Length: 183
Image (cartoon, rainbow, N blue to C red; front, side, top):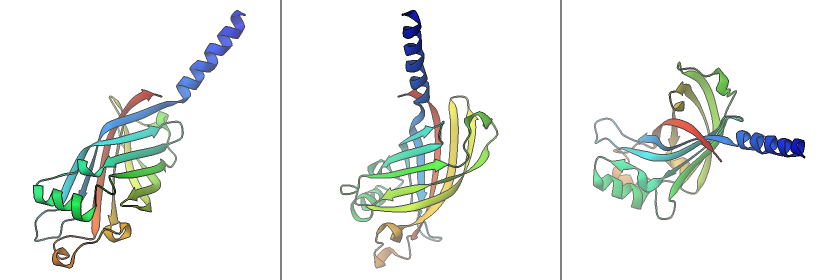
């Protein structure tokens, strides 16, 4: 009887360890669509959820569109109402995988990895393939990457009146520090 209980407890522990995820609820996403000689068009969201399954290298991230903050309140209002239509499309979601990810091989020195996945934004989905720098941090794992998307790929229309002041090419930077969380 003791052996059966011991085996059952070991199975439960093994399941618990295998479901360990690394999570951040304060990842930072910055985007910029500025054009030289005009006012900076840049926003930051510091409340992005980012999840990593270290066993598989799978990642997922969710950013609420109304969480992006601009230096100029009017830009934020136009972004939410006219461009991204936050009431209709309240979030951006990325799901993907870090190729060749091995948690045990990480150190304080950042290593280069490739992340492949899909970005869902404004009702559209596009493949993303980007380089990332990943390292161990005192609290877990740090991930940093930069990539660009075109607003037109997500059916985000830029009115003719501001086309010269706003780039169709949007540069995106993601920084996340993930800690361990049991599911």
